[in-house]
Image 1 (cartoon, rainbow, N blue to C red):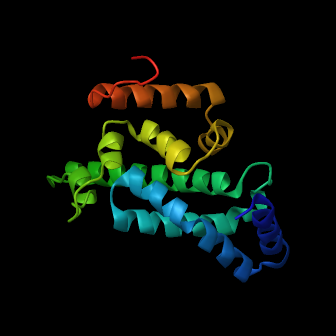
Image 2: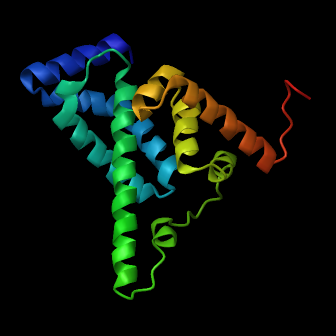
Length: 183
C-alpha cells in the first residue's frame, strides 16, 4: 500500500464523495487502527467500536487531510483523539454514577479478560502510562516516524523521542531487561 495510492483514493473521496475509494482506504488501514486501539484500551469490543467511530470521523474530516504526512498517521491521530474523548466520557459517567451513590469501578468493567494468555507485548505495554503506550504502539507496532507521531499527538518531535526513551527504560526496569548496547 503506497502513499501515492492513498493520496489518489483520498482525492477521489474528497472530489466525488466516492464511497468505494473510502472503503478501500478502510480495508488498507483498518487492522492498524484496530490494533492500535486494542493496545490502548485493552478491550477488543471497545476498540472495534472506537475504530468504527474513527472511520466515521475520518469520512467527515477527509477534506482536512493535507497529504503532507502519511494517511495512516492522519488516521491514527483521529483514532487517538476518539480514544481520548471516549476515556473522558467514561470518567465523567463514572463520576456521575459515584455522585448518585452507585459503587462502580469503570476501569474493571471496561477491561474484559481474554480467554487466551496476554502476550509479552501486552505485559510490557501495561507498565506504561496511556500516553506512553499510545506513542510506543504508534512507533513500534504501526511503524510511524517520530514526525508522524508528532503530527498525530500534537506533541513536539523531541518530546515524542523522550517519551519513547522513557517508555523503553520503564519496560527495561520493570522486567529487568538488559540493554544490549550498554551492558
